[in-house]
Image 1: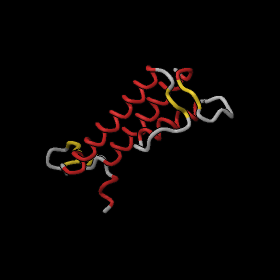
Image 2: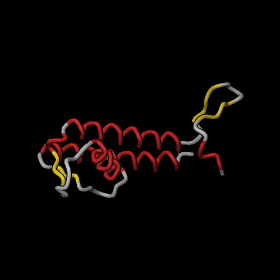
Image 3: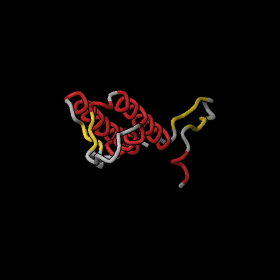
Amino acid sequence: MYKIFYIYNIDTSTMKRKYDSPFLHVVSIQVCLILFFSLIYYSILTHFKSSINRYEPDYIDCVSLSTTIQAGIGLTDLLPNTRVSVILTTLQQFSVIISSIYIVFAFTMN
């Protein structure tokens, strides 16, 4: 039952690490993608607009946007305003599709 939390298991016959479960590997990939895209969004923050004009968007809004897209939910109150920002959000959505395919294969191969 707790086997999904182990990343590596040592095979005693060859004394090599054997890939045991993809759970933490998948979680770390998702977190890295969220941080990667949030930093990109923050660096081109002028290409986004806020649907709520109460405040200027900051890094937390970029993390929220990246997390929401990576979770497959959609967009937040930070909306792409230019072609560059639309292309980047689309690239992140493609990364969600690719990581979902990886997750299916990783969990069915064990």
